[in-house]
Figure 1 (cartoon, rainbow, N blue to C red):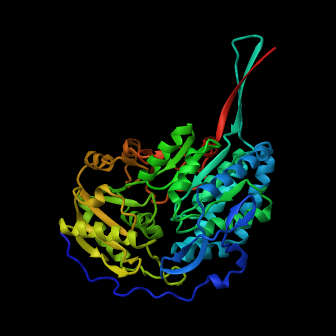
Figure 2 (cartoon, helix red, strand yellow; figure 1 turned 135 degrees about the vertical axis):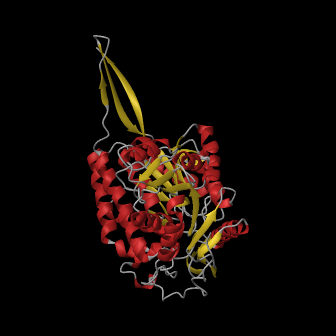
Length: 500
């Protein structure tokens, strides 16, 4: 149906001079672990690199099970006091942390871009997005209401109160190194819990910068602890999941790892919150506003160079508008500029590492070998850079249909009927997010209710905010983050029967 076009890029984008040396507050760039409000070092270290250049930006102590166990004990000791603070006291400290993040937005964004690779503009947005969770959960801290239950006994009164679960083990990925932490830590601290955080080995500096700010605004010692590791990821994760002192695990990452952590956590019957893999569908019906749909898909699919768990992985376009939509997408994607995140002209940065590039390349090659056409892109530019790509004539037998690409590839599948496309969209073990565009009100309700995902975007491609519940169904996870529901995952409901 379509013919291939000339490649977009032919060379690896050059990197401008580093901006880390230009931090307004260099003390935010910490080269140590953070345990009990103290900066901790160790002889064994690991390197953190800039994914755009593969050059080292720093080294951090490579902590293991022993240090994790120590951190858990520290958090447990701190919990004894922190859990008895009032919601108002926790509100005030979280608001101070929130304002401190806003004050240091540029430096936090600079550190994030240096270790993650996303553009500085996207990094600034993530800092604001991440900070919003501290503001939101600060306000939730004073609203953890209990309830009074009408009693059938004249001499008894029934009521419930909410109490923090205890020490929480938090394991976060590299793709949103600030927001994934604040979304979990904000809820945990607001509830009265203390935390031990294992950030992604690729992006630990953002977590440590947040700790520096936490220390400055007066978050008490032991309430927030960060255990960076690279070589000892498995043993650190196992210690968090099996240590009986830890009462809850909150994890964002792959379904495979999530299942392992869930199994380990079951040994002590911990509460778990899991935000796992996705395979998001994005459906364009013939009655859709195509211009709005293209704008939405560009934001949804290519944000973070396609490295988001809610990124549109399978784009279904109805037959009557397929050719026009593919042409519109191709024209817009061709305007993208790949480069270093600090380059002001860059629209899309690198993938996080070579493994990311290998998966994207494999998916494109598999699709082409089975009849897909490359409309734009489809080229490894060297290093961790891959050109933003649009593929046409996609089929369900291709790997992209069943595997999450996690890269800048928009794969266009043609469909004919509503019933057919809903069946295709639901034909996956995952159920995190889905999207569709239509101007038929009845269809909007039908499709939104029939899609088997925890979140549905109707006529929009951006669905995440601190005000709304984030989470999936099926093998995409358990629990919800953000919104009025987010704090509940960090609390127990205690029933009290008062006789007199």
